Figure 1 (cartoon, rainbow, N blue to C red):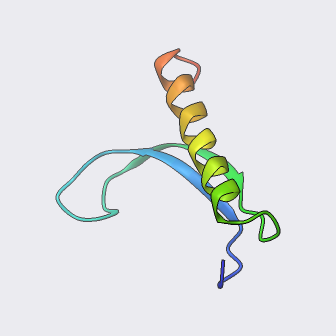
Figure 2 (cartoon, rainbow, N blue to C red):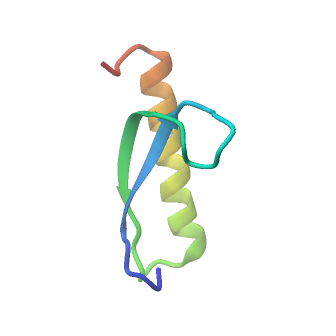
Amino acid sequence: MKAQAYDQNSCLHEMVGEIDAGEVYYREPYKLDPTIGYKANEDRAFESGLKLLHNYISGSLS
């Protein structure tokens, strides 16, 4: 939030031995909102991750 990086993504990526080094297969964008507080923003991130997972499992991602 300090950096005002409000545009975020939940990502489905390959797991490798180095942090953040795996290929990203899919992204689900979401926005942080500095006016709604930490918990509400965490809920947005969580919902974005759930949407990504649901779309992956259901075959909606291409």
